[in-house]
Length: 313
Image (cartoon, rainbow, N blue to C red; front, side, top):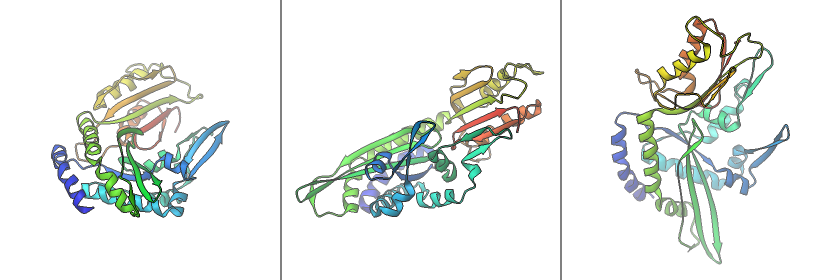
């Protein structure tokens, strides 16, 4: 295994050179939704008549020794590549002890804003990429083969940035780690090139995120209200235009009570080298609103989705 990983690592050196001194992203390996569903670790929850599917990562880690083998294998591979890995089990334990306000926050009027378990996990772990893994053991007579897949998701947007899969040759009585090594080595180069394309785009244009601005019903004003400098909604649009790193800057949705900027690019780091997430990036917008006499409440959904509600704290 180490020989194969060394060869793959050497192929990654050009990508490391491209990044220069920029820190490579951190990665958390998780089982895919498909694997969780096929193995009985998917819960179905009804919310106001709408079915929601929630993967039971904690139960899978407790019950499935193979899952721990796979996560350890992929973590080791990512470490060999030079990435920092975030442990799934430790993250889940941190969430279990987290205050309930981290998953559901209420305003002073009782209005609530919830985040999904996946979004909460991203926020607590602060991993840049979620690496979903899934596998199926194929058996034909005495011979076995392994079909293995990996899918990298940007934890800021939940968008897929890389994917690959491979199947080993049929063989007799081979252990899971050996089959994993063979399956992954067949597509690691292609997977690496997809990740590199994502990193190149991120370095050039900044990190993608979503900013949503809303107004409480009892605020007494809306986004079309006139301020000293301009109309409130226009002031917010100007702030986004002046502070975005690149990409879309005009709102995807614009009305008297709602502004949604989808696909906005924010800087990867501050001039001092501090990593930027959506909450940190929007702090100066909150200050600008406060300086103009507008109270606001900032809510986060994961690392790359922020909602600011105007009218009260």
